[in-house]
Length: 176
Image: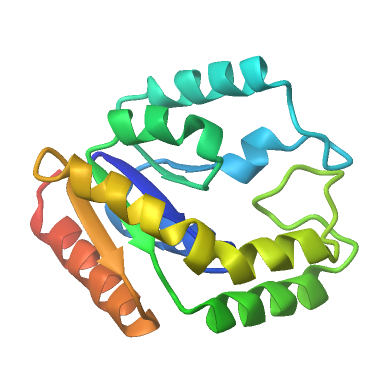
């Protein structure tokens, strides 16, 4: 695992998992939200965003978390491992609502300054409809990647914990 892509619904734990994997593996972590948003929650022009993603992908190694469907094919091509966090939508919604309360009016560490936490019905609806509108397409894309790439499909917090423990154990056993 040298180029790891972490994807999944909002609130599935992508950022937390990427951070934990980075800590245990020593690989650099790239939070796409931090690179995408500009102060005031302004998105970049699509051509600028694609150029940014291509630059990030050129690095020798990384753990990258985030969705951004417009550049998913680029990232899937560049990674050697994909971790799909496929947790129940109720878990994802609870986490996002908790996060919104905890960080209300302030920027989270993985976001740029000027992007304070806010409430968004659109985002909550996206999370709620993720299983019915996006999940099948993601699973199809991931199935086409195998066996050329490692695909890890995690469906519960227990599976996530086992995966993190296995990565940490492997990192300890690998010299250098």
